[in-house]
Structure formats: structure tokens, C-alpha cells
Length: 298
Image (cartoon, rainbow, N blue to C red):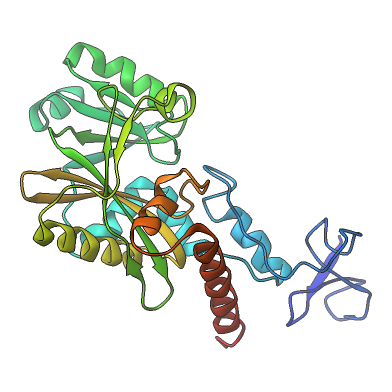
């Protein structure tokens, strides 16, 4: 048996037993303490998908006792798991598209799905990003193949009712008092904004900001802030919506959205009055602010 003791400032000690707590302190981060040229003040996770956006890296950084930018373990995990994310949205009174959740070991009631939904439906893994594993089912003959594809990526999947709707996105920054940007619109080249178009072809068009009545703009911005708070996000996120007429549905939240200078998240803040360097500076300050509050929580 090997025993480790955690100090109050996040350092680790290898000790001889739980009753003998003396030993040399070290950081849990494997790269900490090596010659990187300068002291690291704060970490800025910009990883997508499992093991980056789902709370695992955030938990590592918290175990190491170092400050970082963005959501903590809870917000990151909820932002990755689409089933619990939607439950959090519903609990907050936010409108979501009709959906149901299945696990791999369950018997999937195909006839019940066909009775409760109408084509098209989307079948997607619960815990992946970048539209990986998602199928748009336009005919019920495609359903079983779509379920198999989604289950090849995750043990838990969602079936969601498809809508004929506009795709709207809104960026959020802040901690206890988050702010929302002007909304933007995604105009997919294909039937939906899929992995191939996101990362290979790039033919989807964007309208930044979206052409929307002020009333709808404000509703979307208000919903974005409520979605951010519903999952206990911190720092920054992008919230995606469906707009059907004047009906607004919250689709999902991305707690680590795309962050290049041409990505939707910074572009929305650009048209909202916050340029890229100022945005990065603001997020770093929010990371330090959250870290100080986290350290004092006890």
C-alpha cells in the first residue's frame, strides 16, 4: 500500500502511513516544477470532448491546487453529458426539444419511439462533441443503424425530435453575474452542422450578428444566461438554440467552445464590443477570481 497526503494548498506528500504525515511535498501535475522558462500563473484548458471538456482535466487541476480558466468539475461534466444537461435546463424552466434517453444494456423500444416521435429525429451519443456519432433519421428504416452508430461511441444515447428551425448561438462570459453577447446564426451547408463541415469542408455560413427582432434577441440572451447558470458554468461558454418562428428552444451548452480568432465564440463578442485580446484578458481575470473564491469556500 502507498499512502498519499494532500496539504491544504493542493500539494501532495508520499507518507509512510495515514498516521505518519511527514514527507516531501510535490505537485500532482507531472509537468509542474520542470524548467518551463517561467512560472505558470494560470492554466487555460481549450480541449474538446471527453478527457478535456468533461471535468476530468478540471479535476486534475483542482487536485493540483492551481488556478485555471473556465468551468469547474460540475459545470464541465453537466455541459458534456447531454442527458443531464437537458435535465438541468428543464429544472431551470428552459424550453428544450422533446427527447428521450437510452442506455446500451436496455432493450430499445423501437415501436414506442416511432409512436412518440415523427421523422426526422436525431440520434446522438450523450457524451461526445463536434457532432461525432450523430445521425439525422429521415425514415424509420434508418433508425436501427443510427442507434448502432451512436452506441458505438457511448453507452448512453439520446433520441431527439427534429425541427425545421434556424440554428442560433450565443456566447456567455462571467462568474456570478454572467453576460451574454449578441446572438449569431449558423446556416448549415448540409442538413445540419456536422463534423465534416465543421472540420474538413467549412462550407457552412454564419450571420454575425443574426438578423433577429430585438424581442427575440433579448429572449435568447436571457435564456443563454439561465442555461449557463443552470449547469453551474463559470468563466465562459457558448449556448446553442433552435428558433422556430418566435419559439426558442435551448439545444446545448459548450463549456469550452471553439476559441480561434475565427470561431463563433470570440466573433460574437467582437460584434458585441469586446475584441479578442480583451476577451482573453477578461477570461483570465475571471479564472483568477473564481480561484480565489474556491480557495476561501471552507
